[in-house]
Length: 285
Length: 281
Image 1: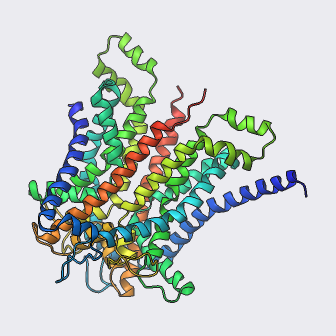
Image 2: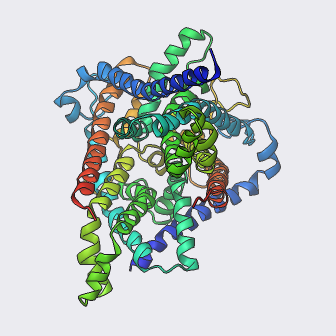
């Protein structure tokens, strides 16, 4: 065999290796989802969704957990969405290339790299102790809002940046003010991208466990929360609690709750991908 | 108004630093910095309290190193395959599918590590403990594969096509082109992806809290229970620790240590991206 042939064989075999590596990631994911379905699917019924937590695994349900998750989802969105979009627009449309804007930029990338559990410590001290919100839904959702703010800001900036300058110039040419241009032209044109980023960020917030544990969300809450100042638990914390118990029945419960949590995550990610594709197709600058 | 919302991000940073510093400061009034950095025992929750952060750092580094030794070879191979070998259509399908790995909540990975991977490892290494760094590290590695593969692939794709074609024109195979031309040209981006994966693995919490145990010990044995910085913070937060007590302050001192590590890594990645970016044309 000469050198050329050897090189060709090496070349081909790396291609095969690459495909195997890529598929192995997916196969592990598939195997894992299969395991979860196998363990938990039979446990999943309407009673599981309606039951309160219990010492007996076969009687325990996730009612308090999914109600808590729903509250967290809505409240976090209410805080993070307007703030994140406003900050993204400010940075992209208003901030000049100044010291302040480059400081903001470095700061945001730094925040995106801070581990989520550190946000938990921030929430525990600022929202929990200083603002006296304790371990309420409000403290938890404010903490998560700060956590996902950098993601929303970055997504907003990218979406706004993708709007071509000609649109801006045309709007100014017709006599529109800067704010009119942003509100009537730029925002509608970039909405698809912004929503994609926001949905991905919220799906991240729904799956977060550690910061909420640190803020003081409880593993056991006897009743579902009914207002923003109530104590709460969320699905991931309920799952964590069940995993840490020795009885096999709770592991089955955890698998069943994971099916629900993964369902929520995948649906949100699916919507985000769908929006991105539709938005990219519709607008061809 | 808009400016204010931008400033909230600055307030967040100031808040994080202030909270970590002020609580750590009152911690270090009671425990000397020398003990914190040099003692080889971490037992704040026991009667005989010792405050050496080293066991938590060694636990954190151990799981991180295991995770990276899974994620780097796989992630980089995938990146090279997707950018140099895979047809466009295949890549457009595989890349988003792989990114699902990063979208799965970490508590779910914790379940996987404890219920599936550890029992499997037990069949190979019968003396492995029920909680161990190996299982948590491997699963964490699977989770961060997309961080390495997606960012590295973006870096490879940003290299101008002309370089690749020039290499083909000289008679190089795809493999030679990939590793002798493309990877060196994209090296700063690839290094950045590795650093970010490193930083992500250090801060990862739920997988290690569930599967690696709660026993801080200064060891690099992957078969025994250990504790990471993040898992310690979770352990204390789950218990009923009164505000203002020394135990309460320990989680801020531990959080401070974690923050310093990730802060250095993140800024190192910005610096590399800025300084070593290869410019063409």
